[in-house]
Length: 409
Image 1 (cartoon, rainbow, N blue to C red):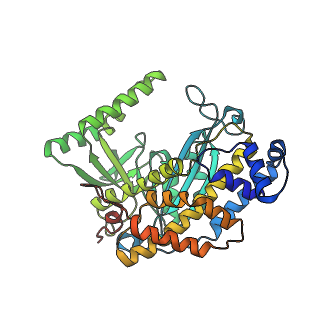
Image 2 (cartoon, one colour):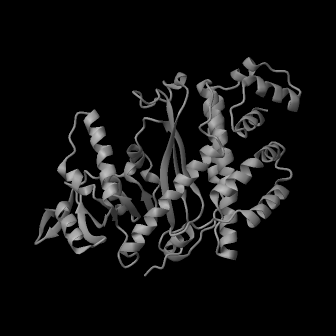
Image 3 (cartoon, rainbow, N blue to C red):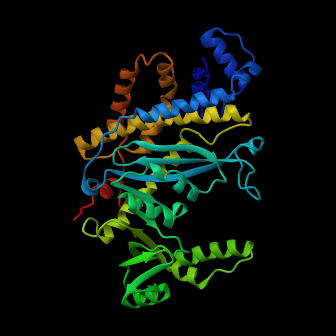
């Protein structure tokens, strides 16, 4: 009855009222309950139980790897990011936000998945004010030998990169503007002069260069660094944003930062006899897949649509929405792998999620009825996928399929 009520609420784009849930319970189970009685069912114990379901679901995922192109060099290809949204301020104690001009209460969902096999490897709800960089140290134990980790600047940590390298895993990441970068010349570490590099690249009309360098002031980590010029209008936009932020905090933008701001700077420990420079830059773009997934979570599954409610109910509801997302994701990834091997075409996450959300009330009934009818439901969904749900390639842009099948050495 509890799970049925949560699924009834979670399948809706807007949050149901307690009275609506009470009516639904009466209708489906012939149980007369008040809205106060419904509210009392949401306790710390209920939260713990629902969170256990998330863990159980992640442990029984069915994975099927695609070993094509550069994927063959790595056991897993892990992409991670977080999505944040405000919640009612009555939860500020349990879920503190950033305060100030932002909300006093907010949620951050840390999400990591293996794009090679389709497996969700981390899904964690935290307060919005928890830095992404903190996540790198707290989840390091999940990295395995042979993994490729793709992260953005928010997770940039020299300690993290060094630990990954020591484990025997790989990374492709953006370099933090404050990190020290050195070249080894005549047995001496000489700090890289980015302003000089900029002048040489502009003069020689060079778009991208690569160097073998060391990062870190104390414990220097050897990496390949890829330095890519960006358009002047992008440079100016970046500087305006940083200057405004620094002005608010009473700081000045350093010349060192201004010099690095003229580039996209990538670092990796993947050997150059595996992936060449251009391939590294293109592979990093695959990280944007997680942004598309978060967009679908919000626009299709409505994870950020929440009315004022008590903390325990909110956490239960959010976790059940994530359970539905995981079930849909697992089904999507299985069909993606299967159909890709047959057709060499990829399914669209957005299109498939929309169809699955439209059919989620039916799925909810199946799940609360011992999964009777699930096979027929899956067959119907699969037929729709094969007819109308292929990923469309945008003109003059490198698509996901092209990135996945990049030629390698």
